[in-house]
Image (cartoon, rainbow, N blue to C red; front, side):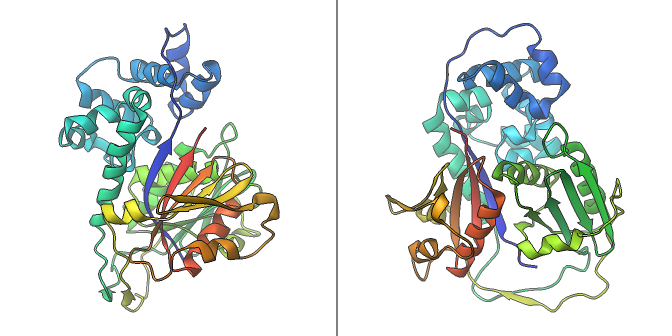
Length: 358
């Protein structure tokens, strides 16, 4: 199974103005926190600052800045950058260890109202974990004696499958059309408490990029360090499987694989700044590098298989193997898989996912 390392997440959203809330907003937020942003955005279209302020006021009405941020992390981790989303109980301490300028930007309403300033701050933060990935030329990686059998998550049209190890498969239908975050978090925590699993995600036909983002948000929030996209063929392991409600804990690997050699990938802020960006709009595939952005093709003209124009667009012999995918939330997940596979053929196998929500 080929997995692609997920370096970080970015959320790009538009700005709007604030105005008073109406009765019932907090009931909506506290009833289903994970869906609050979408629900309030429908209630107050074009007013993302107001939506963020309502969520903050309902979830964290008092306390100092980091206390409020920690409450938001606990209730809606997907509203936060990766480092904060995975901080868990240590979110307040993590916040207090950050410079004041970055701390301000962790409050969603401030981040939306000061988009350019906070985007720079959060990009710097997103780049930092790349520095900490210990990959050097010809690094020999010893197998983890506590590693589990691989987990595989498949997003189908009607729900979410999880394979924990080689024998157990469980399934949950979507909740209100979205990944059942509580169910998925419960399964992932069971697996993580048993041993040290890695996980790959694969999407069936008809699944949108947003569903991948929703699933990976949960995976990152639970604290999985090794997340990737599985090859499309891996979806077949669920064919004909019975739909158990919960997965049993996976087993440790009975036979450890041989040590493997990982080539250099580079990293750090320089890698992020120079990383090529693949942009998917509602109707075009675009490519940006070195300040030059160009359209490669209309989505309707892409056909099937490897995207030759995209493969040719990537710079040859890269110093860093990091690239960024910025896609519309409605982008078919099958196209995301094709783009990732194409980037891999060009020598780029470390991807940072961004969501374009405007």
